[in-house]
Length: 445
Image (tube, rainbow, N blue to C red; front, side, top):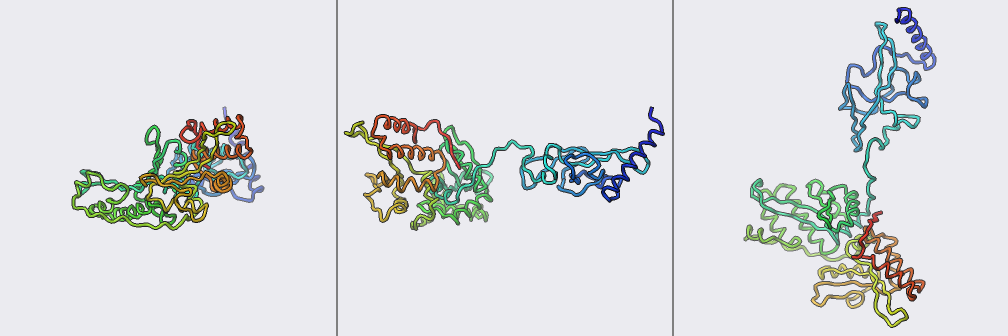
């Protein structure tokens, strides 16, 4: 049974410890209440001079500073949200010491602190800037050069303004602008890196074999417009962007709610034009002429690596020959575009050569619908094409084709391709390139 003498002795011990603490630290201790008593608990940072948390070296029942603003913290629980981070502190602990109040009774004084496993270093306050709390998120994708994104967009992206009937809109039509890149599922990681760089939009699987990066929120689309104002597309897609931007400005000002004819007029020459439904709904539509553009050259080498990552091929041709092994090996770098982008294709060729004319490296289809750039001279491949893309990297699955392309070039450099064993190596490499690459692995860096 605990007697009064026991309590008296315990109080004497506590008072002796108090005197000792005051002599050591030269600071008067407040034994009566915590600074945060009577109000919502807040995370405090203790004076942490030793390598352990508990003990009298922390100025028992005293706190040094508030570190976080805890707007959602209550008496019995806590949950901290960092404004600039996405992680959540899911648990915290209370560190307490017994002390004596005015009525000479023993009470437990508590100071709310971060949970103990986050204190591996000398000063716990430094841990509050540590991002490694409770998260299972994967590391973010690497950011991509903005000119690469523009080049890739010239090859693969679309500026779209959709219109469809709805009972909710005043004029029974809903107008929805969006920017999208729709490609094979194998390059979904590249889309995620583009999304990470631009900071807007969503990436999702669109079907078993395709993935899409799409930006359709009006605020987010401002980021897209600003990007292409600064890093402009340079092919025929320039005209699409100009029309898209005009539509976007009308929608942003909400003029499309009362003047949908203006949107229809602009949309008439955007991408594939109007659907049959729209043409029937707006029979008196007067299309806005499609803006003309002049090709002004390649703005940046990363534009080429972006465009090639989307719309070019690195291939190896195995042609029958009268030589010892019966086949000739040829490396080919090629790009095929619609004839409307003839100036753009000639511009790419002229980036590596001077004054290229149709008939040398550049060829037209029989019906003049398409135009093809082919570079297959071995010297040009090893001295111009490979060194360029070694410096300005191909991204996505096509980087694997480029890697195999280089392996064949290395075999040819040693003339091993003229032997049966060397030719067999090349055949095995070619079997896994381009459309035959089934076991792909994205290599975005």
